[in-house]
Image (cartoon, rainbow, N blue to C red; front, side):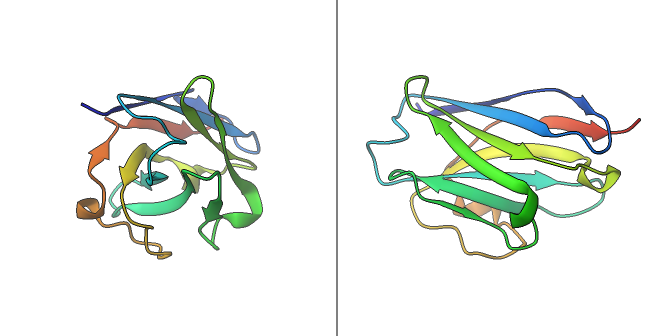
Amino acid sequence: QVQLQESGPGLVKPSQTLSLTCTVSGDSITTDDYYWSWIRQPPGKGLEWIGYINYSGITYISPSLKCRTSISWDTSKNQFTLQLSSVTPEDTAVYYCARSSRRPPPTIVALRSHYDYWGQGTQVTVSS
């Protein structure tokens, strides 16, 4: 079975850069026609789609986060990463990586049913 696992710091100070890694097992992020997304859920809010990298290395970032967000990959480790700069307390959320067979709609709200595999999520708190 395909498995995804998020890793990274649980606490980040304001103005710093958040860096998270999603490690994928059971599938190659470059071989099959899949989209690999980062999604987050702030406290008391719904799922927010951040962006994706697809099987060809093409990335797309939500317009609301594009100016300070990048997604990249390390194909030798079958990993893709999220970097979110200049973080504020508003970036506090549970962060997920997930796979979908179709291109995620470029909307703020992420639909859980669009993705066939999810990581378990990792809590990230932005605080001084």
